[in-house]
Image (cartoon, rainbow, N blue to C red; front, side, top):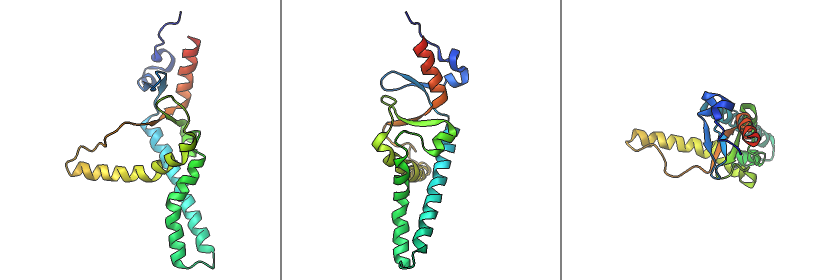
Amino acid sequence: MSRYLDPAEVLGPDVAQRVEPLGNGRRYVRATQWALFFSWLVDFGVFVIGLFVGAMVLASVPSLDNVAVGTGVLVLVPAVPLLYGVLYGNGRSLGAVLTGTRLVQLKDGGRLGARGPWAMLVRLLLLPLLMVFVLIGAFAGGTGSPPGSLRRGSIDVEASNRLWAAEAAN
């Protein structure tokens, strides 16, 4: 007979405050806000570098005029996150690897798979745009919070693995 496992016994009281259930009832450890910020910052840096390299490659082609280079750069803005997102199917971008986080589906903790490119596009382009509109709306007297629920969330990989191992041993 297994007893209820108190996450504070395994993870400590500070980390145990971040334990939340997935949609299927399995518990995980939510990543800290700082880890999410630094992960996004690294990924945004990769995006900017990719955009810069792509623009330099386009500008170095002698047969392209300025209009073609400008159009190419505009195409690169969504293309770079989509291409970077191909590597994001397992939920571990470069930023996530460096901060020890993983983006998972909140219904069952599963990987993103084919939704990786879309998730990276949202993460790098649409989320910052949404934040601007939320701030504008908040200053204009709105609620500042968009409706809906999250479908994906970031987990603290190391702490979640310790919790899952302790639950399996219990």
